[in-house]
Image (cartoon, rainbow, N blue to C red; front, side):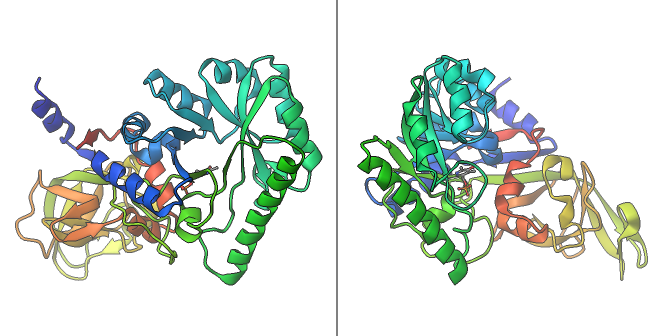
Length: 379
Ligand SMILES: *Cc1c(COP(=O)(O)O)cnc(C)c1O
């Protein structure tokens, strides 16, 4: 079978189109808004937010990115098996009994707290770590005021402290209270790092910002910015940001029309008959559903698709493998036509931010729940 046949086959029901050139573009724009000394750490957890971690990481490594972040050991193993050379930081929890993998695969582990550092140390494996500092989010890390506990991580003979990090809880908000809180977090981190340096410790590479830290605090001069959602060309939500680099969405989701029918006034569509036609209309059944990652919560909440370059509403409940759209106003829609669920078609575009808004969540959530059963076509 030729490549063309393969692509044809993969477009037989529903699929994702991933534009790696847009990923490269976004990485370059992000680097351009960061201070010169601050490098990009590409966050490729959750299969690169649904884009395919191996392909995304390979492209970014080609573009010069040297540090990657994942959430799990299995994600890191997959990247190493695919011959990714760069440094990989696991920002999630790894059970200390897996410590051997960390050293064998040259992985860097984020240290949750002093007790965790002790367990990693006792494994006897030599492990590179970054220390997580809790500056107020209360998720991961040693309290920034507990300098003694942080210091003891440096004394662990099997651990090599290569960096320190914190995570911002409200950097996506420009409300004064949230900005104050973010500044407090940054100050607490800088103070702890400064004191450790004063005591003679080499605190290594420092990193604080995720995507919104870059959008709203681009002037920060740390060593890395851990960018996830921005790399994929999306904002988490429609709220304002201070400095948004130009970004291109990387992913499109498309599916084929399976059937078209006419229904009369008073007839209902889909489970629960939540939508009833007010007048005669033309309905198309599209071959993608919530098992493919189309959020079911969009049902009845303003969810839309694009067909023949025109935006049309989703009708009634989204099913597991199918959804229905109103094509009354679109000329000659027939089975086999392409429907865009995320992406552009003609002059119209639906962004994952739109799906997020229509389903009460953020783009990150939409992207990383995109069904693994959708073939990805890289273009
Ligand atoms: C997921 C994650 C990121 C990336 O967040 P985005 O908002 O997608 O840029 C950065 N840092 C940590 C610790 C994370 O868990």
